[in-house]
Image 1: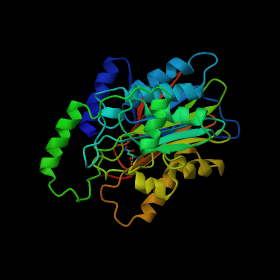
Image 2: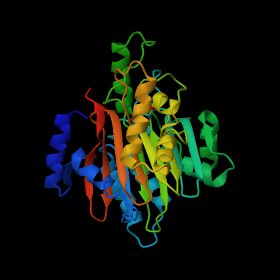
Image 3: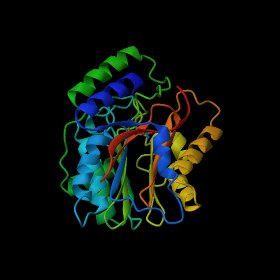
Length: 334
Ligand code: SD4
């Protein structure tokens, strides 16, 4: 999102009773609380980008009940964004691939390290729920393409028309303006916006979910980091969890979310862990032009952190005490 839009949104948020976006300095104070016996700060939910605010509200309906379940919370949050037809980066209203298909990736992981994932599926409103079904009803972790769609159909997930007409229209314009379809699609802060969600419930258990239409105008058949456990999402209930957003290929190269969780296991704060993972991506890429990647992380105490290569990445936070957008610290300006 452009900064101007971001701050405009912040002003509207204030009118609606939502706290203004918090700047990096304030949010770093949270990590300073990490001592030998940190305060337990849950239930809590954090979600990538602005659409995370609405998603968190759905998660909170689950998390605020006395016997809440983080897995139900992250699924409810992801479903909210998947159904938002104004969202151009998640669900069937998301960005199409180079051939005009909207192909979706999603995964989910719980506090028992159970996980499920679907990739490269078309015409299903809730990839996240299909991913959960794969986790709960099969011996597998990941189903892709036609096989995943057949599976969804057999479990009664309704097939819907995709792409929607707004996406078709935008695709037509894009195609006209991009005659050379083999040109590398442009990656910038406006054409990739997965939702990744991490939540800790009242029992202190953590789960996570991630869902996206992926890199806009990608090659048909491409799968990003978002359905890959360890890349787009990783949870370890002993430590915490992490989710990623941005250029999936770069995130996969360093097993991004797993890396963040392992760094937290070694004693790093969520903030430090996200920063180190981002620095690893930076070190492994000579050309960082337009290469945005960001992580958010939550440790078992309910402490959160985030970091991105470029400015402009933010996330939504909700707990008993907070409901706000937080600007992630970053390595460089666009
Ligand atoms: C992908 N990581 O498909 C996703 C896109 C994304 O913010 O996260 N956009 O590479």
